Image 1: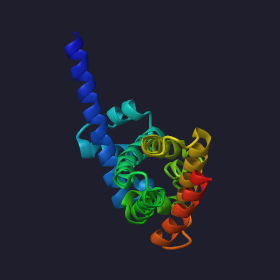
Image 2 (image 1 turned 120 degrees about the vertical axis):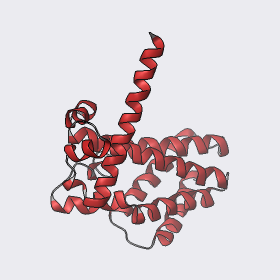
Image 3 (image 1 turned 90 degrees about the horizontal axis):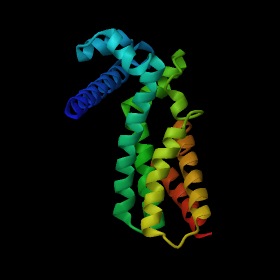
Image 4 (image 1 turned 90 degrees about the vertical axis):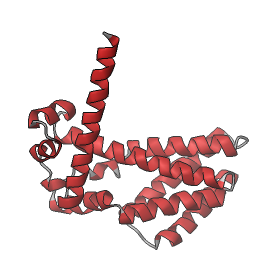
Length: 197
């Protein structure tokens, strides 16, 4: 019985990932406002009802898509941080510049930002008002890095620096003021000052 349950869970996880990938591809190609549940279902070869059963509608699919994208990206940020070790400026710069360059070139982020101008607003909140997924995933990676390389830094200082640099980086994704490298240089300096007091 346990093997059957595990098999079902594995199949459901594969189906969910296939649906999220299809939604991502359709969003990149046509913009989120044009993505219909039936199109996602057709792309995967399942019924529209299957997509609704899995995500409870477009809002649920939007959330799953945002969460998947952020989690994958957070692992790339982790690599950048851990590659630079305890060099705060280098680690901060590498993580921030990757984030800004990826946001500028990532077709999904671009689709999110441009589709909202056409009235679809289910994805943008994951970068703005519902950005807790970004704060949580990025924050977890930064806390892991700080614990490994800055163990003597007070937890309150680490928490403040992490929250500030994530929020500032997201604000520059939405409304860039400089090149990614210029912004990353400035934000890395802020990160250093916050962590070193």
